[in-house]
Image 1: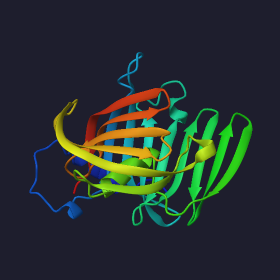
Image 2: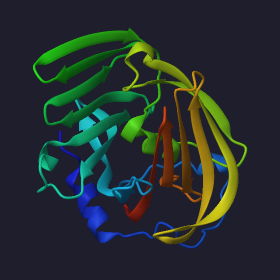
Image 3: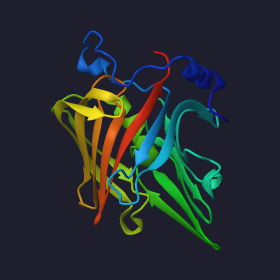
Image 4: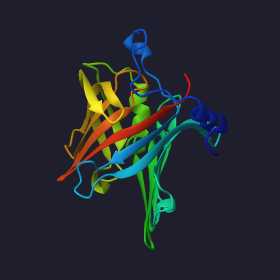
Length: 248
């Protein structure tokens, strides 16, 4: 089914500043919150060719009767060459936070993940070839676009840490990885949205295959405002240039 139309309408009417002044402090356990949002990113601000705009939407939806948060990444300009055919989607169960499905679709390339109670089925199509893979994994957490929902759901604060499993879409030989998430210090940084209070969050698998550093909003929802993604010799730095949050 399509995302809830009322949620989209609500986003058009309620524009909450991503770095608004503080509300009354709440206990850490009360600071976990996922909200509908439209987020505009500049991806690759450290790249010689310059950044590419990307739009992230986080909306409530249903899939086969199951209530999910649907996170979609799309090109900001759908009229560009092949842009309309590109999307990266993740559905996350609203009650358990377990991933339900993930789909990355590009021209002549498709990667789909369907999660069951204790396994994940992966379909990869590249050109005219199709590969099917099934792996055993129990209660993984979302990655890729679904990471925003996971971060928003956790009671983040300096010193917070947790570990969980993910299914790594990009590492075929070693899909299932254990991730350590650690919240470092609180700080204030300059962003395209102004000066923002943030927590620095690091996510790293035990095998050292990649590392993510996110600077997330200190106020809930704890969505990233800047991210640094390192895999192999590649480093990609991206930042949010606009964020519109749904109503409380």
